[in-house]
Length: 166
Image 1 (cartoon, helix red, strand yellow):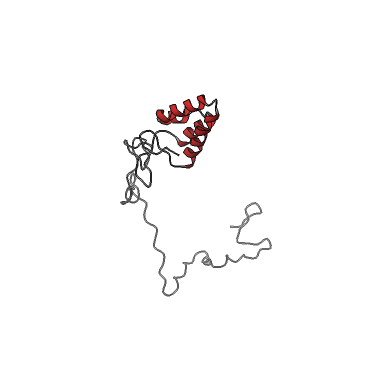
Image 2 (spheres, one colour):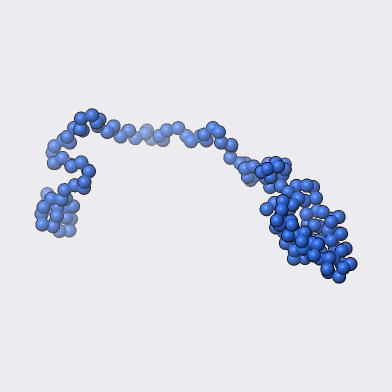
């Protein structure tokens, strides 16, 4: 069968000469001949496996390898439980508070009346900071301001002694 200009043979160059196969690839046998046997010491590649019967698939269903924890259920992330919904401190193992360190520290810095202490549940210190700030006409507001910086820089705790979340 001859090929026309609209369907050129890729093994032929425009001048009619044959193009050698790419380096390293086996040369295809001429049409009508069987392929040569594999070189000495090599075996022929295995034939492809037959297709599975209708309605079946290859292999076994996927199972999770042993040694890994089961996936979380109920929306609780790894490392958390119903007793510690926000996780536990990695060093002490104490559950984290439901209050945020960032919110508490910013409330202390931006509203220096002890509001951050009220937020974390430490009402006694919050009341004292409020009284000192009001009685000193605002000069005592330095105490809650510095307290807010300390809250942000250290591992602060709430009124129940749980570390604040980062």
